[in-house]
Length: 423
Image (cartoon, rainbow, N blue to C red; front, side):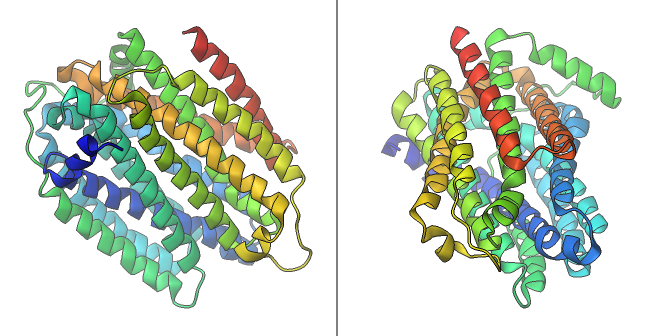
């Protein structure tokens, strides 16, 4: 990335928000990955439950609050001063993570899933204000770079959260350590949020619509009024459907198809996160600060083609019989490196795909309703991701394998890439 964007991380206009967002994403992923590992490698085995179904259910539970609460969250972000709202949201996260620490120590799957729902709810309120505040502090020619930094930071947080949550929780004393970490990160995020500069209130006279259904209807009507903004939202939502499908199935892929332990799951999530970060930063270099979607169709096609090759690579993976293998044994076989390469290029394509769409949505939404437009985007994202969970559950329940699910998504992605090109 050019120095013209990196300098933003030395300024109060972006740095406190970047740190707050980074710590929040890190916390979410420490907890989520710890939960997934506990379910996949300990709780499901001990209780005789289906880990594949529980993990897919967990993905849907985390996303569902975005559908329920994004409408009121968008209204609050337009009605209130944004930095104050962020501080209150992050203070709520501290309380949720205290409950999360207790849930980890209890290792009760239903209590863990309840806390996951609370985490999703807190994130649903943070989403609109997080993206809506960027145009208040950044110039238009800084938005691509600012969004690239935020996206790269988010997926770096996912990477670190994957390592801390995924590899630590199953070790001796790991559950206690993760419980401490999630509470400490929540407190640190609240402290960072206190340094975010204030912003003008977008619509101080806005009357809140407390009826969830009516609120969603009104916001989706606003979202659909601008064609370029609405098409960007559809494109963003498709990205999260594809990403949610892959991320939710990595534990099953590693354990049941490759014979890998939690280290292999962490490797897959790491590669995916690093790739998104690389693609996000590369996108800014390609566009040189211009708000444009010209690389989006190419990136969508790249996601599709590498996904097809991933299915082929999985079907030709070299596995060892017996105990689950770690990263070293998995990488000893050259054929397995093809899976790593495919995951990397799928995610790099994803980073190039997603950053321009977020920037178009932000820059072309009227300032007075920007938070509500972004809330509409989050509702649409949630619908697509819940649909991903439901479709995946239906396919798996009908006897399809994980590779069949990946093939289904890859073919659909080709059709989407062609359709985007026509627009």
